[in-house]
Length: 274
Image (cartoon, rainbow, N blue to C red; front, top):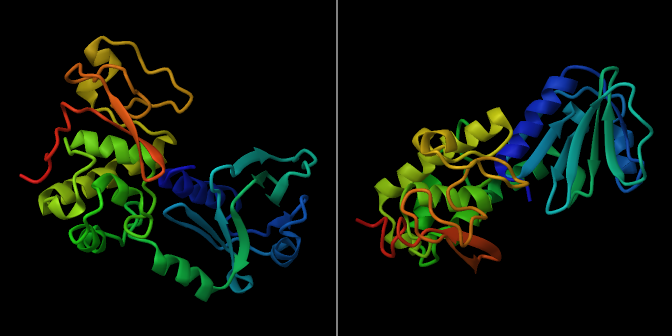
């Protein structure tokens, strides 16, 4: 499932290609035919993201709400657009560009009130300028749930996925099994600030890189990471490999229905509450 930086990047990509002009809309697959018919010929006024939810605003017509889920893909191309396949849930097009949406969990035309209800049930998003970590902190500090599980709870903090969860905890030396109520305020503030930075970099570069400059391959004389996900990371999908900092073996375990990765030496039990 894409992490929040990807959805914010998709919002910017839609604005870059379609904002301010009429857009043709269609649903070759047919599952969004009614919504596409209402949007067809309308002007894209804005595009927004909150966590893993994308909202395309078409003024009084409403918002196209998209959640990619595990299997959704949203790709762009230039005009003339090739004939769409019957797997395309939604195609948006103008004279210069087209965008094809395939396999999303959600693609629906919603009202302002329905959109607000989605925002209301989501936690703060490190990539939304008006959000901060205060509301998330109030829930975390009352919880016995592990900090690693809390970071994936979109009702507490929106947009963080498995990669950012593992990496931000490593970067701050925090035991992923630490209960939320045992995390210090200083540690939480550091996590939030780091997520703002890391996810912002993810939007700018369209990839996840979490390794500090002094730990990059060229600085340490080590081979670069080779992985379909790209980007330099400390622990994510590096199970049984050696930690870049201490040489210990990276561990993995299931937590909150996802694979957790951490270094037992750099993230010792009870770290993060001193």
